[in-house]
Length: 265
Ligand code: ADP
Image (tube, rainbow, N blue to C red; front, side, top):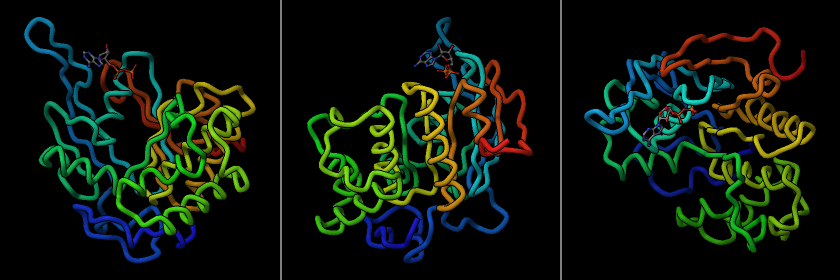
């Protein structure tokens, strides 16, 4: 992403601010992975109703990776994504993000970490209806108190980056599913996150539109150095990732780096 997006002028964060004009994959302490899960477990409920969704997950992800998370329904993918996205905390084990022990942060600190470093894309786009593409994309900046002119400029640039220059005034109802997902991706990257977490981002799209979205995610990963973590159940979409992590029964069953990734094989 170009340095025009106002990362350096955004609201305060728990982690040290990135240098002005830096890219999405902000520097991490040397030798540290961006993300480190160690023996992470998650138990839902208690007593006889307790269910262990994660049973000891170890996972390191470096800045700049494009990782697809796959696995059967109920294998713990969403639970892991919720933890990685700082929306939930492990029952036991450790999650370090940029060297910060996330499980020790308060709810408020986690929210700030999320807003500063993470962008989210969902299967259902989750755009505000009757609200223009530009305003949808501006929302994260609005929450961070970025002034109007700066917001508009950053949102325009993010929309251009996802191929939607000229569509700023259109509402979701006036856009195709693929275009709506592009708006959602623009909203997720407008604040220059280090990591984009995408949960079944092509789940509501036909194959052609799905491929376009995957090409966009691949470009954002390769050109803009945004780390991408994506849950998908479609092998073709996972083939765009460099690495495929397979969950089975709450643990990482396989973790494979693909030789010909990026949907180019
Ligand atoms: P996946 O995303 O791979 O389908 P999930 O992480 O959603 O798997 O779920 C893993 C297991 O944890 C499933 O058996 C699911 O029913 C259970 N689970 C998920 N969320 C909750 C919850 N809030 N309360 C109780 N059980 C849950």
